[in-house]
Length: 194
Image (cartoon, rainbow, N blue to C red):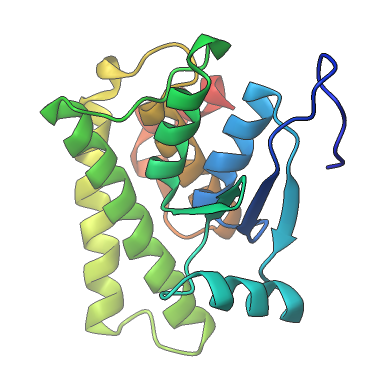
């Protein structure tokens, strides 16, 4: 994206570090677009992007938001910060404080992390019969049963829970990382969300 004055004043300087396929970076990209905030994209899959990422993060993990010279790690923290910074935007992704919502987010991220680990193991030549890979699939399946039972807590707009679940399920579908047809209610929800 390019910088452009908004209502006669310059927008904040924002850079987002991530890879195009990262579901965590995608959460932030969707929110930035919904907020109408221009940002520079740093593709961490390039040599230069990887160098810049490693200069900024001790764990080399995406996404990273650079906002007016300050760094923020973790997609949930970034989304909560942006929602707090722009409360009148109509986009609601505040910091989650109730236990049911916090558990929902935790289960989404755990399922996603399990399938990401399994995806890279298999891509790097490990057998799907590897016990660790099987456990990741089992963990994800259990998580999806839990999430399917709690779909009614999701709002109808762009909120932290739907943003997390939608980007996770989209990545799983993109990478064919899990047979989502076992969870038809999640697929139905995803078709509406997408």
